[in-house]
Length: 258
Image 1 (tube, one colour):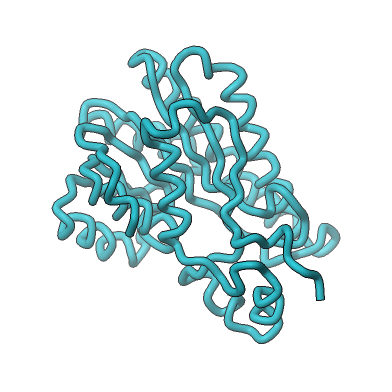
Image 2 (cartoon, rainbow, N blue to C red):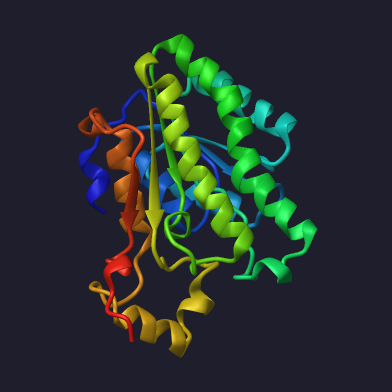
């Protein structure tokens, strides 16, 4: 994995959705680069202890925190546990998300709409509400939101997911506008089709393979591709990058339409 070039020794990072897929790759990448990693997963998530052990096996310093980010009290407790464990939080990586199964608006129930918004938008609001004061008091902080190509164009999610990811990208820009001059850097990474445990079944269909074959890259991406971009944006090498929405999609938007 190319992200070994970065040095995050002494830095503490919180990674929500940090135990599977892209989040696992991000957690491992930061661990290999010397960071203290606060890996977050849903309560009772089976992959939590497994991925946590992988990070420790890499020689990383880490804690595993179970949290449903749609619950503000749990979010506040998560941030406090991170500070208690490592003294500070330097980087936040937002990777936890809820998907809607590509449902059109009229096929989306109010319950499903609320759940997607509670995780993808409200959860990020809660985390920022509790982590930004800490970062501002330290004079610096980096926020990297794993958004989606669905935050840029339609068709890569349903009505709720697409709306929520557009909202995430707007949140990044507003945080930058509000706090960029106070030492806060916020950016979004927008993955295209990426092979993870959750996406595997959909990407292996003939329909998906045909669509991906038309992209410049020719197939789906790997979680490490996204992790590399996240670590870059969190590093000092990206010190001049503020408020951007960066596609990491294998050229999906410029594909030749069949």
